[in-house]
Length: 309
Image (tube, rainbow, N blue to C red):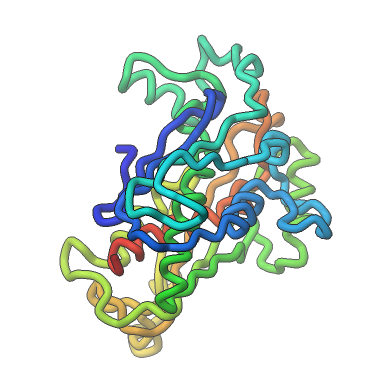
């Protein structure tokens, strides 16, 4: 499926080395003033570029393509003078640094750890140009849609903040850049953990049994490229602690329903399987988790806006 949500529906389209990627966001109310600067900032975060001109480039192992793509959003419909019309919002981001010739060697082979083989098994055909639809390039469109949703939530007092809390075994943020650089220098990659906090969400958000809030969050997070795990509250670490010590830690959700306190969840992202050390050519990240932070926020916003719409 390429459609997310029921009240605010987001349809994603495009391939990594095609003409463009983009999306259609429907269900957005009329009269929302879109902060285009905020969208540009979020796209810069996803790419690993400096957010403002006075900042130096971020040392996070981002791929050369991510740093070169301008990610300029072209608004096709649904917006007039920066204000939503209540009609479907359609936008595209043209792929300016697409180089399909870099991947011609994949026409007749599959990369280990990628979706190359399963796409061909399922559809009988695949886009071999850098992973096509399965490429993380697609997440730029999610960031655009999610940032619009975030603006709607902010107006209602709901705040979302994610950050990288671990790179490999390293938990000191001051050492993240050096850790990533060491793997990059060795032609390798490393994974990471992102923690996301939600504040201001009213109690009572979520439904019991099959519509639990954490189930929707997990569904959204696990749809992000390279995400391999989701936990909230005590998470997997709680299995080693007695119930008498942790039974009051809810992570902001009980019985699938928000309790009005801060919601905390974490996602683990695997290392990029395509590395020079593995003998795979291409323009790849040394740590995809660094660039996934705004994507986690965007998908969280798309989940929550469907509850508050």
